[in-house]
Amino acid sequence: MGDVKIAVIGGSGLYAMEGLTALEERTMETPFGPPSDSLRIGRVGDHEVAFLARHGREHRLLPSELPHRANIHALKQLGVRFIISVSAVGSLKITLPPGLFVFPDQFFDRTKRDPQESTFFGGGIVAHVGFGQPVCEVLRPLLVAAARAEGASCQDGGTYVNMEGPAFSTRAESNFHRAMGFDVVGMTNLAEAKLAREAEIAYATMAMVTDFDCWHDEEVSVEAVIAQLGANAKLAQRVLTRAIAALDPNATARSHDALKGAIFTAREKWPAARVAELGPILARYR
Image (tube, one colour):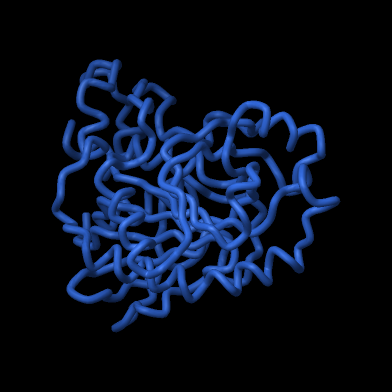
């Protein structure tokens, strides 16, 4: 594995990192196909950082088309230990207006996609990682502190409900999500968080509220979402730069030992082909 320990996955509206210097473009290969885009690797202060555009730089991938396993596998190959996810979300509460940053501490799954796409395991190796606390306890407080220091309006904690997409919610779905007490709704983060946990990479989300979803507005407008993303982008860049500068890339989080005791299949029974595919993920346990 490499020695790039911090990664940023940029969602809608964040297709590059302005603070990233000494850039190197790297095309990665994985057993799960290519990632969403080539990785841009550079420096933020003293830290090497990898940036990946979740939907591709031209925003050409639907939420259901995202190669989550390839994305996380590629970052693991680089040696990444911490992932900051930047994501656009809709608000489910009047107290969370557009322009606010939310740092969720929980996720809820409302997707219909193949569950196999949210795990590296199967095919002869069974693992069940703990996921009760899906967000990194080291990384999230750093992001919150950085946002506050940059003057962002933000909420510390909350539940991100992951819907299927690509259509926005129906009014009935939006009201259901509100009745369940969820805070924000998005289309991408849960599979990332699950796969990062299996890869023993700490993960946290910076969710940028772009709209009130259709419980409050008649419809969600793409034009309005894009306009709000543009308004959020410069502030998001400053928050990222500050948080990365404050992060010790060698710090230890619970996620970094997620596979310890989680693999049920005896080592001598692991199929060689699966061991080869999951090489950087299983390296500590081979």
